[in-house]
Each structure stands twice: as C-alpha cells, then as structure tokens.
Amino acid sequence: MTTHDPIPARLAALKTLPTPELKAQWRELFDSEPPPFNRRYLESRLAYRIQELAYGGLKAETIRRLEQLGEELDGGDKKKRGVRLDRDRPITGTRLLREWQGIEYVVTVTADGFEWQGRPYKSLSAIARTITGTRWNGLVFFGLKRQGGR
Image (tube, rainbow, N blue to C red; front, side, top):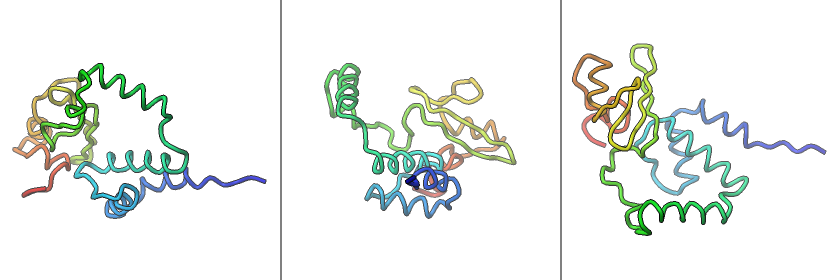
C-alpha cells in the first residue's frame, strides 16, 4: 500500500497562487496578519510552516543549540533578540527581488545596508534610483511598503 503525501504538491502550488490567496493562507496558518514583505518571503515562510505542521518542527536539541548560540551573540539578553530597530527593514540575509522592464533584480539585506551586484549600498532608494534612473522610495520599489503608507 502506498500513501500519497500531499505536502509536496501543496508547496509547489504556493508558486502559482495569487498574492491575496497567499495572505489568506498566512492568516490561516499563523493566525495573524501577513507581514508587508515581498511575495517570495511569504512563499518561503508558508512553505516552512506547512512542513512544520505536517512533519513537526525543530527538535528540542536544535532549539536548545540555537538558544545557546543566541546567548553567545547577545550575552543572554533575550530582549535584544526581539528588538528590531528599523521595523521596515527586512532581516539580514533576506533577498529582495524586483522585476523592472523585463529584468529581475536581486538585492541582499546586509547587517549595515544592502548589496546589489556585489556593491554595498546604504539604502534601497539608492539602488532603486540606479536601476530606474529616477527617484524612488526603495521600500515602495521593492514592495516592502505601499505607495503613500503601509
């Protein structure tokens, strides 16, 4: 008897779902409003959550090790772990993708700014200006914030 695992199909379907449906799944799986980050972020977090619920989360040993590493980095101050000074700024390591005039641009969030095409930048607006040749709010250009507000 073979059993069919629906999880791989569900993960593959995330790529084809319209963004409003991704956000609806977020509300269902996380019981909270989705964050204002780009589509790929939503897809990756939803994929993780679907697998976590189906197959189980991290082992207790792994969680303990991560906590230990966190303590080494922040001296055990758990308040520091939850604090993000710039709430609009994605977490270090996040890759932002934006298609502009048929070309896909990938920017990586670094500890002290952003990196695009191997060059460091202090702001997303500077990258957006270089790509488009016009002034843009970088958060709006990369879909992290709606024009005229959140």
